[in-house]
Length: 279
Length: 224
Image (cartoon, rainbow over all chains, first blue to last red; front, side, top):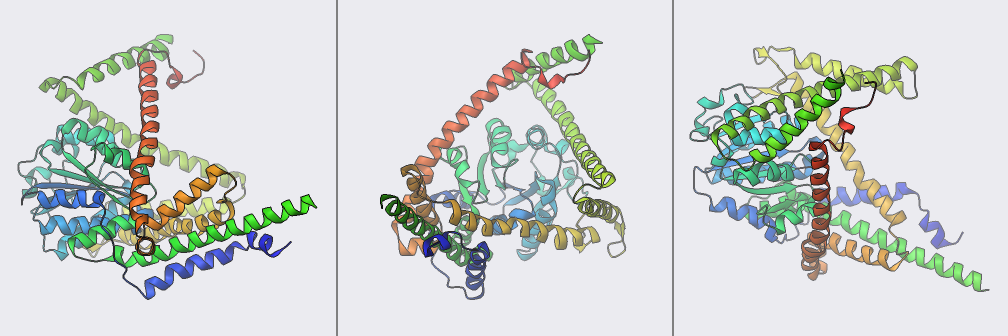
């Protein structure tokens, strides 16, 4: 076995170590590379920016703890922006395991921005059904959620004054880690109840949502940690996502180098085999 | 009995299928009221699915433990986790002065249930997902090889997209960001759209077959 063959069968623990180091070092010693904002992320930002004070913004945090590193920073950035614009914020989730995280992020950002539950925002929590829940909210919000997450009757909440159905919501953003998520909100919600819809998602599912973006079914898309970092840049409040981009840069490059190396070794092995056969 | 097992479900499926397809195009208040009522039923049925899932999970792991199948110890851990979390979820929070009732926080005070969620479930699920990065890197090294022209093309596209999605890539190769956007917006979107159209046409065809009683697999088998 020559050097190239040995390198092709390298112990995978070495690769794990390279990735571990590439993740850890930039987190410990951040470089702070400039982040270019894409038109997809700007689409969500500009729409929220255009909403007048008191408009209704619904943030559906459709993810579980596994996707927290990518979607939690997106939720923080969106909520900061919405609260800064003095929008009336409705929070909810279609994913049962994400209820605690959604509650945590809403409470944390609301406290930071000096907002009061029931007056400036409401967290509705989770209810079963996904698609049917959205239809139910489109028909009558109070039948879908008679109480909020803290058991307060929704009809009595000041923040929901004048809101009867999803038709009264100005903008919905679904932060999705899969289905149920953005597509569910489009198919069962936007198509029938005609509100504007934006999306945020993990990097893995982002390419699958581009057809919705291109056709105007969603007006913007925040994809993965990169999208969250772009949003943080747009609102001028750098947070966890911007901090994580250096680590992502390093790991992406580590993978690129590994792929190039493996192909170089593969070609070397292939060439030496061909030469051996020719002899 | 055949009427109850076969004909009645077929009639119900046909009537509701036609009715709710038509309902979408009829914005009359009565039609909307009917939709509101039926979606409430669907939500209740969705709740039952959760019960069904938990019951099935209990059954599968009970069988594993009884037969002492390989890894049955993990099933015991699962039982301990489920019962422990349920017990804590129904417990009384002395700090908040209320029953926990499945809430992570009460009036800003974290409950024991919330502690389990934030300090056990969140890091465990996060760690499981984070492991993917290591395995993807290892798998890319072992299998991402230019064995053919198509594979080489895929490889080049992947490298460009990986560069274009991070600031370091855009710094080293400024055009990578624009090429990435073009790959995602044009090549990727058009292929995805074709797949979506195919899936949607399939879904429409299947729905029609179910409504008109051609597809009857949902009725199940068994004796009549």
